[in-house]
Image (tube, rainbow, N blue to C red; front, side):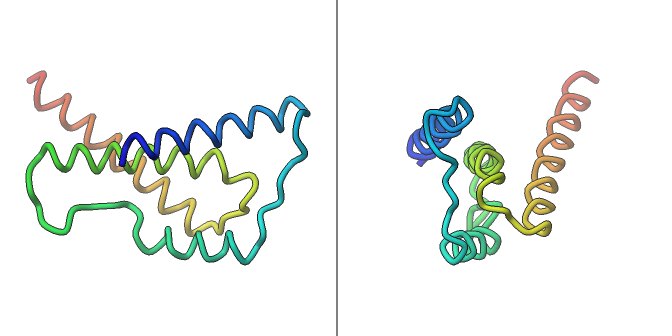
Length: 109
């Protein structure tokens, strides 16, 4: 799954780079397509395991969610997401950063 998401991220980054360099016209995603996509994403993001399996599994889901966030941020200029979706992604980023800070505090004391 992570490799698939990394590949999608690379494709998105490539197209954004080509658009910014003027080699491609700026795509306007169909509003109905992006609306359906965003509604589906809003329901399931952030991904999490159905059952708490292990700390290792939690880390894997965090990595998947980080890559999804990165792809979303790359695409946000073209899909015009609603503010509530941005808020959900920012809340996730804040959570990850706070978890890492708490982890560092515990391990350095």
